Amino acid sequence: MINEADTCRKYVLPKLYAAGWNDDQISEQKSFTDGRIVPVGPRGRRKPCKRADYLLRYARDFMLAVVEAKAAYRLPGDGLQQAKDYATTLGLKFAYSTNGHGIIEFDLTTGKERELDTFPNPAELWERFRASEKIPDEQTANGLLAPANATVGKGQRYYQEIAINRVVQAVLQGKKRILLTMATGTGKTAVAFQICWKLWNMRWNRTGEHRRPKILYLADRNILIDDPKDKMFTTFGDARWKIEMAR
Image (cartoon, rainbow, N blue to C red):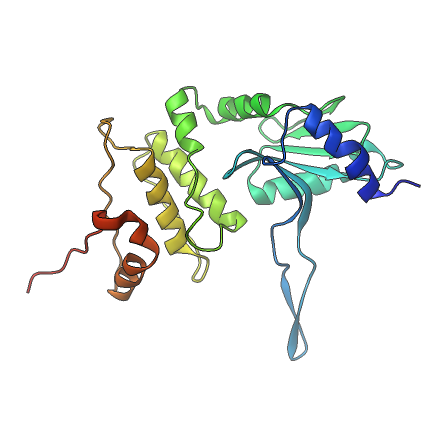
């Protein structure tokens, strides 16, 4: 009997390749949470992590969809609820469930479910995402795909990637006020750095000129400025400057 792993290897992955997805765009068996810690007596116990069978990316730092695979003897839609839950957690617009033969799609932008013979190709999903987010111009679309700085830190956790991409998208769409709220210890400095890095490298500025932006980074304590400036933000080189209060 063909199990879930066999289904993934023999049927699902070939279908993704046939639809135009490549290895750089496919993350297989990707864990995106560490698992919730549940108090048990004097100790805690970590519950299982959340792991998607496949995460589909249009670009290195921009996810589009999640795919849940079930064994070939199961129904194509048996993993759809799980795929929808993962898509909601990851802020994705498209969720897929498959048994290697049939494919069920759920479009979170329309709330519609449909059966497919093949997976949509990357360009199609990207265009559907752009239409749902009202991103008609190529400059905004290309800016949204700007890569993060992979040399800093250990990579973004899923919620950090969501925060970075949503803020950058809001800026590119001309929104003047953006409030991003994150708890202590969730990587606010890393998120702020990547937002600055992306805007800096795409030469975004409010006047539309072809130049790098001027970014004011504020904090309420010196340590919150000095430490990032001397470590994480060193990649900006001489562009960094700490404004000292005159005495």
